[in-house]
Length: 288
Image (cartoon, rainbow, N blue to C red):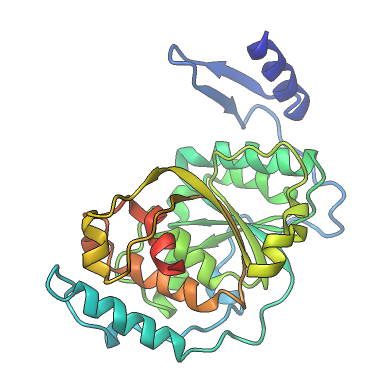
């Protein structure tokens, strides 16, 4: 019964699309079956691929070259101290404005991103959305033409990387990079597989978000007191849940230093990912 209800909801959201379920229960929607038409957003569709360098995005200070290199288990705590000291000297750009959504996706993950955005629109979200990807090969023209009319623009992080270098800009690393470089004062980041069931625009009104400038969900795990990362970072042990980074609500200006620090951790992913769970834990470290 639950599967039938879900199938009916998907058929209502994606009329005319061919859907297939494989032997493992994975759903695939064939986006090329029909094309969505632009509707209700007040402006013509943007080009399927937007050159990030043309977006007049904020210009952060490049700090990675000022920190100890390479990062090792011997100097990692000193690296964290230097990174914190460096970002504290930086002020957020003045041109941040408005609200928006960020999804990092490309290739086979674009179908999930499309479904997530369709659900956002179905439940009333009016947020403009940027889909950040890693080059034209990740964005098929036909699928981009379907997604773009949903008030979406595609941002090629590889183009922006030429102006604002990043040492290791890969799949996980691009999330912190997109959050730092997006043009909005406030934004919601969603993983492409996060399917919303209400209007997420209301998250900006949550009292705790208004108070702290960020809304972060807990994950299931907890780091024990003897977890090696406490010593590697010099951060004092905290008895708290891990961070879930599949959805984040952030005030870009108020959390500018945390976003810069998270991006720095991800620039050194070769070291930090060997000790933590990818980009997810870099956000926790940056906020602590």
